[in-house]
Amino acid sequence: MTWGYRYMKDFIKTILENHFGKEAQDIYNNSYLIRYLDSKTGAIYGDSKTRRSLASIYAIYSILSFYIKDFYNNPKAYKQFEGYDYARLFVFCHGLYGGKKLQNHALNNRVNGEFENKFRAIGKNLIIINDGKYALHIDFLYVGDVDISKSVFDIIGEYIRLLQQKDSQLSFDIEELRKLRNVKRRQNKIHDMLNEKSEARVFEIISYVILKTYYKNTKVYIGFDRQNLEEKYLQLFKTGRTNANDGGIDFVMRPLGRFFQVTEVNAYDKYLMDIDKVLHFPITFVIKTDKDKSIIQKEVNDYIENRSGGMKIIKDSYREAIEEIVTIKDLRKWLYELSDNDMDSLLKDLEIYYKLEMNFI
Image (cartoon, rainbow, N blue to C red; front, side, top):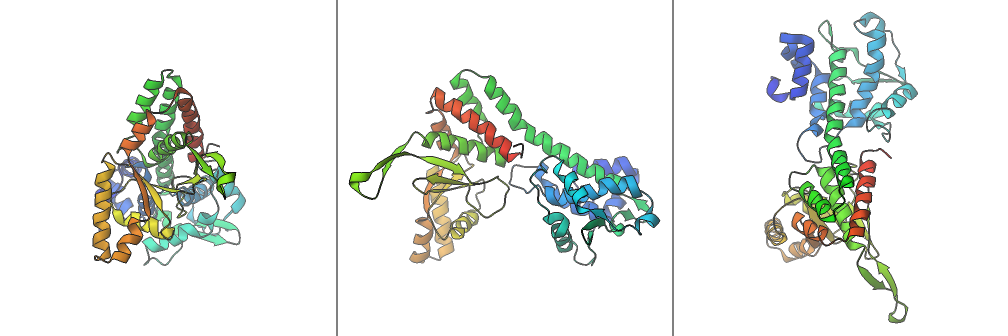
């Protein structure tokens, strides 16, 4: 397969041209390492829940940072090198943007597994593991006689910068919201932030704080008999960060025990997968769409009908598992029903959960 610029992200193309000029294309075509990074850096584009792959990318970045200082353009010395200590690399990774909560699987096995899956014919590990020490395989640091490590280091550095730039938008929006004193203007600002083009994590955080604030005003009575009912207000809990990829449910409600799943796709097979993973426990889907919920419900039902082949037992098991559908229209409606105090509470939660999402706290 010929690897050309049409497969290469613009920022990678620019960096390679700055380093290698007219040879940039050949360097890209002949570097498995650069092509691997090209495949792992999609999170800077679009609004999907594309994984950021920070653990894998930072594992490479940490080794490169020391390699360039110690062995750049010195293959003879590097061939005798036994690797960098794990603790040294781990500290470096944790000091990077979003690296505070990263674990160690990338250094120990993740990168090599991903690399092997992408380039099976190579038969070589990208990271050499030597009894708690780590090094990058020399064959992936050179294209011919050219040491490409500095260009690779710059590619990762630019990826980090672009992620920070993308993440900063919500921070700017929160700061602007904090300065607004009029409740209506605050609601209008959040209304504008809540749309089909919202970045996935922004949509999930905003939808959560709206739902959390809206439901907390709802009172229920619960108990084991009519004479001993307790008055409870609904509480909504966020179960983890957006890109945790832990197969879990996004929000959980107490004391009713409702599950909420946030989605931004119209590929309804994912909805059924979400239902399957909790064994058809009823789910409320919070959907990043401007469509009316009745339209979504019809489309989902049509998809279930097609999947079921008309079998009632299959249709009923999926339809009964969809407790409610919430769309952007619903969220905006409930947003404007919030009081002054509710909006103050919402803004505090918005800032807290943004910081949690970004690993700032």
